[in-house]
Image (cartoon, rainbow, N blue to C red):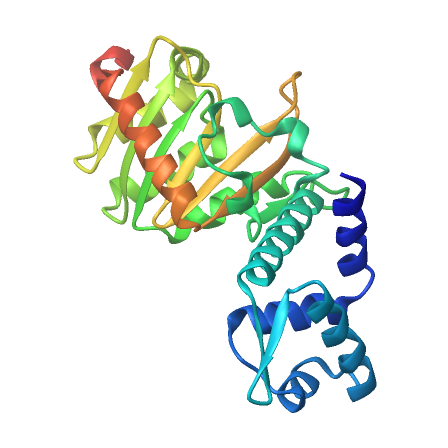
Length: 264
């Protein structure tokens, strides 16, 4: 283990080493090509390539350098580690709020996600991010333990105007909360009357608040006290596949919600 950690340290202490090994893992390069790609001096490249040859990570053939099988293995492993640590850095402040128990995908798929957090000047920024997505989408699908007033308003207005197709699975508590407010109840009834809307209720509950707006998956993140802490959204293929599969599962295990249930 100690020697392996020493090799990790050897690479980590020099970005040039990481770059050179990655370039050679992708294909043959001359020293001139490596210098142009990395900006390293010929003297630096000489030391790096010598160290790599001693470790049998690269070999020289006809004036060019190329990674060996073990060199490619090390390059891939180190790249994976860098990607993991970069993703961890992005998610560090919000990971405690992520419903990871319900997220059946590798967190590395959130590496390029948009993270929105409340601020003093924009305390509702995560919800506003969701509203922006809902206002521009042609199709919205959602599965959630809550249905906030602003989202309901946007969805109802755009769906009844024929601008949006909407399908959702809500928890019983989410529906009950809307039904308790006369204004929201009227909006929900209007939404349910629209031809391009369908809502179902799931007795077992839903452990997260997810929205699929066209190709973007958006998650609202709250703490154990229900306080809004952040939102995360991404168009990553794996996350989108997970969201659609989860939506389909919840849809199959839920019952239709009828507008007549909210009649005065």
